[in-house]
Length: 275
Image 1: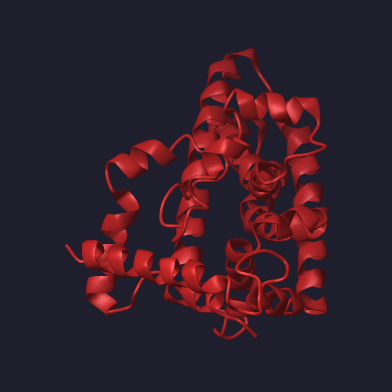
Image 2: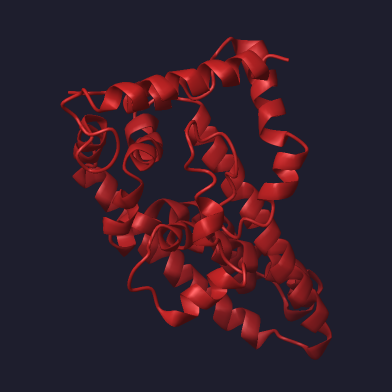
């Protein structure tokens, strides 16, 4: 299949970078890497504004919907709530993997608007993995908050417009959507914690040790060059089964066969930058 030679070439390219890194004036990885510094400078005031608006809207809608979920709670919904939470976690984990894989593997920072706003952080993260630990709450979570605004707004609108009987019948679905929104919102914060080795609250390390959220050791698998596996970063529960069936490799084979584009070519370009 197409993935075998392309994977071999990718690994060889990254090995060349590591062999030649010592002789280059720029650091191979980390905040001193030339590519990491250039990518960090692309973080703009407009992007910061978008993140602030997204965070404020997301948490306002979450509070509104949480109040209405409590107001319409019935004991008969308990099992639906539990199923909704589990379903929301699994969907969030898969979605995090799909978005992570797509942004890591395809596209370019040079794409108009989208590239600098949304692909840039993924490129920076691979050549400076600890940069995320220096980001504040807004920069860390702004984009994920943006993703949840539409479903949360739709839920809030329906709580306002529908009758109690109608809400009763769709309540299980709203439990699932709300749980999904929470875990999508928290995904990059959880990801940040997986790169933080000092000063984490005890409850965070407990959740990591129990593999309720993404553990630090588990996520290190993804950061082995050329970053081609273990893309799910909410809990990481789906990483092993998806890797076992070759899910991401098969998708890459299909896309490469249809488009001729080489996976992670832009990621490699930024890793090779020396000035």
